[in-house]
Image (cartoon, rainbow, N blue to C red; front, side, top):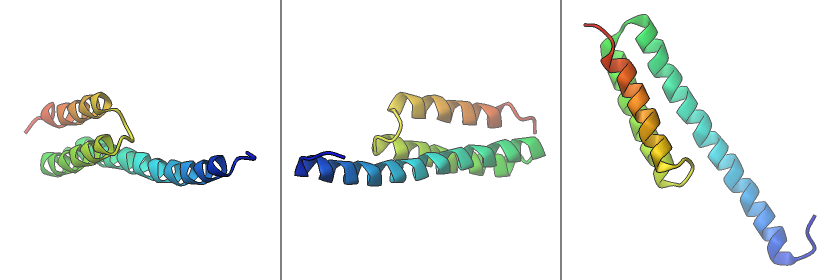
Length: 88
């Protein structure tokens, strides 16, 4: 544990941010799993809706600095690509 008061405060705030970031990253994974499930089920309408929700989540995470903007763009592209490759 640090001896400096400001460093003790930083440790506490960093832990809060870590927990918050972890929750957002977990939500991103869940959003992608919903898209995967809809694609596997062959439901294009549900897959498209889930992909749009995932895209919004990626954009929010990137704007908050939780993931890099380029990573958000790449993952959005992958999710939309899955939906677009579906037939019907």
